[in-house]
Length: 369
Image 1 (spheres, rainbow, N blue to C red):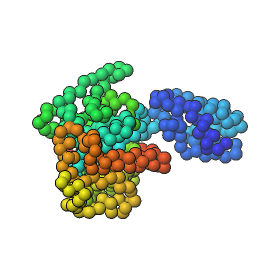
Image 2 (cartoon, rainbow, N blue to C red):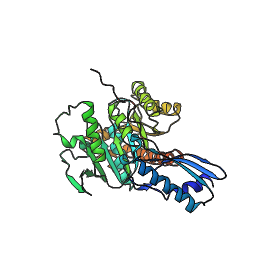
Image 3 (cartoon, helix red, strand yellow):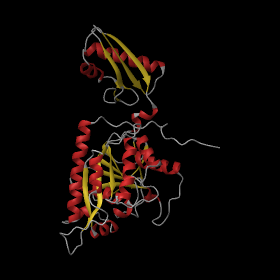
Image 4 (spheres, one colour):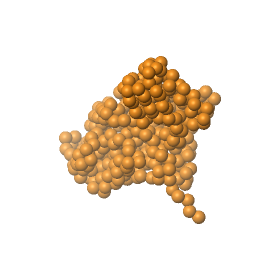
């Protein structure tokens, strides 16, 4: 017996609460194989005595059936850690991508919206979650600011139906407030609203869910990585040193040992200014190739360089992302960015283990009286 044959045998064992096999759920660990015995640990959601006994019997039967009766099987059954529960995973969404920045004003939402639409243009099923609770911009950028979500009964549960435009499904806290109404909430309320949008949204099957996260490294970011395993994060910055200093902090956050979310790369926004009357000229108003150097220093890809073009701002204000333009410098830049991101995600999925959610205890604020 080897590890591969053991896991193949155990793939026939179903976790009763999650209704998936224990191998695909990554619940088998601590495998030790000798000439006549095998031992391993299985995590299950319900660790009551009778449930543990059934799991031991199921695993022993699977080994006997698929490998042979000559092995002594020692199964250690433990309770699944709450933070690693697969109930919180969105099973119909293949990739969840956080688009983030260290500071505001660098064009993160512009990049996120054009990424979502660009992926949809390539034929992928795409959703966008506007997680910037205090400054939602997706309703305006997708020309659906007057949309009011309705609920739909899905297998006995009321789900929120996203808005849809340009082939992208969109949910935002902005749909639940008036256009000019400020969202004045404390952190726990904002986190609760985010989780409702994320897990009560009727996303259906998606190839990519883009999360437009708020700037900084605060409650919302920690809540996202505690709620579900991200495929990876994209950092947006301008070439300016001040923006790059905060981008370094965002990179550092995702690289923390307890968070450990792969960085897919950096997108440099406002790389240069090109006047409409001088389409071949480049003016490096905010500095030159700052994000490129930061990417090289951190050994991560530079995913795109987006020029500072008036049409990008006009398209965003008009609710029609620039990537939808028939031909333009900005469209070419965004579509190249989309292709680079697809390739970076594919490489990540082939070469890096799936991300695990952050333990809930990590980073929890302590109450004081």
